[in-house]
Image (cartoon, rainbow, N blue to C red; front, side, top):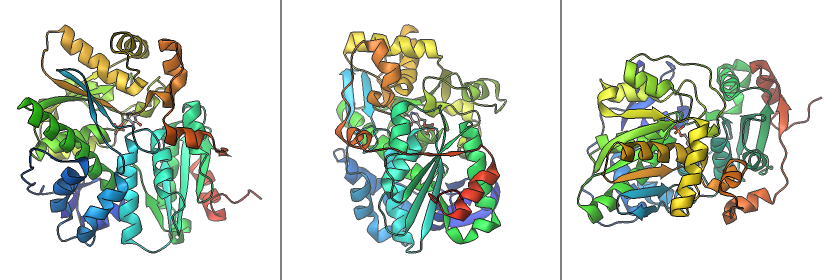
Length: 426
Ligand SMILES: *Cc1c(COP(=O)(O)O)cnc(C)c1O
């Protein structure tokens, strides 16, 4: 498929776009024009629907013939919709190895990149918590691959921090004395550094098309299943930070999947709702909230949204939720439904509560982006009991954990990488 940059000219095949990450002109790759998608049979598994959805995107690509084994290896867990009543569903995206939806994109990208290239590569990723673990897990113990993860020290949950440092071997975790935005700036500087050219640096951040496309798959699966059962399109509320997951939902609808309205729920980092109501885009420094994986002050995928739609405000709405409401929602949903939500999912559920309060009786699926046990410091005091930890996450928590400190300066990362990731500082 032809991919173009959101900033204009540069074109690439899908395979090239996946290896490059960012386009040479600094833009994000989008598939343009979009392919015609299949007529989906009414029944199907996540695997079948994913292959059907992605096949036209991989038409004529080197990886085209391997799509089936790629999807099989990447999605070796399910994405079930749990219906709380006949008009309220939770799309559970936390059944992968690191208990957050990032596993879908990271594992798919890892399967693709390791098949595209046999050369040594260093995967470099800045994370606000969940991305780093998903990417590290997806590339852990792969021959010829090193993974370097940067996260803001003290700004991720204890279990997120433990998980990030638990892999070892080909994975190095750096805890940066700064914010997520600092981590991203450092990663950008490393990519720009001539001194690091021979490392084969590869990005695995959410800007990669190789992470975005697999996220469309679970919207195809969930919406087709709901359509078969309800005979009408279903609506989605997506907890949103960098707008990767929310964009994937809008792309699924644009591709013709049976999706009605899409509402994006942010935390107190309210750049997106402000932009969609005022038309004025004002990126700002991110502020720390209880839903830390959504602490983004300049959502990068907004460029893709503006590329896909001339009038984004006509296509999607957004509302923001403060920490107080996050806690209240975790408590009230636990009381009424017996279901514990992670703080990100709670943002989505609070937006649903507001819609219901305003008289909306339609069928909505709230996207559950992480398992609540990953954020037990927030969730357990509110619901007043211990949460069970999913087995794959527990296995990581049982391992020892180590992260190396790093100053929030671009030079510090470039120096560390030139010594070789994980090498002791001399
Ligand atoms: C990354 C993440 C989000 C935000 O997703 P975006 O694609 O950045 O909008 C929401 N919830 C959880 C648990 C996450 O890890």
